[in-house]
Image (cartoon, rainbow, N blue to C red):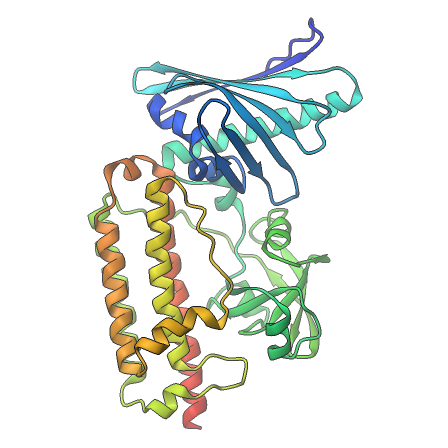
Length: 406
């Protein structure tokens, strides 16, 4: 960091050498998806002169500005105005090719004098240092260090709670994290959490939504034990959870290898599904263990939707916008598959076709997406995440079938 205190305004300067071409570094500042892969939790970028950029962080901070200069793969200048900033500042980004690497220089200028600016200068310096370190990791390895350092709970969230779901579950709150299940062998299962529980506080802080939930998680490390409060029906429970660590993902080297990996995992899951549903009757497939719990057909419809959503999300990444949010798991997303495929056998067959379609999309990923390691790594991790997601729903279907036959 360099601070110019000889002028009325101060300048912060940061440099990094990144093992990537200037074109790859340039797009990390001008593409919405890549920008939030290292810089912020959300981002929108209109990369043209007088185009607007927006960024938000889960702790409640946000910033925005306007691009004033862009020279492809060489230089970017934009204004910056963040929440609580004493005034508008400017960010200049310079890219210089050095062999196979890029020398990146970021200059944040226009900081004034006084206590408020002193505090803001310290915050800018801290966050640029951390952000640029993460940029190096994202571009060189594809790994977002914010995610890799974040501990895991081992839950399958069903989305933020709403009033209708709260009434169905019989919980006396309308805000919280509704669980669709837990990952075997991880902290949530060990803490006694299960499907349809609603987490309302973690470490003494309310968990109104995923932003507040992840904000608490981000303050902890793997191995920490934190108190939780959750509702199971009308009864409130208190427990402690030990947070699990993350392993470094093994990313297949090519799209073809990633598709083959997905096919192998799908084949295992499909065999388990076929064994589970062998000899099932339509009445058993329609049985709900409880009014608020899905039956087997609804679980299958949800898994079909999940595969289609994964494909759509990958399309968004490839097109430059990965801001394809997962919607709440309301009943509407189940209706198309349930209407068109009314039997359990038809739903299973369509799920297998949806998995095959996902594999075809993975095999056809273009070279430019593969070159953007953060995006390709994100796709690979999502494939494994959806495998775990399916395993969770297989467990739910097993419980539903056991309930039907008892």
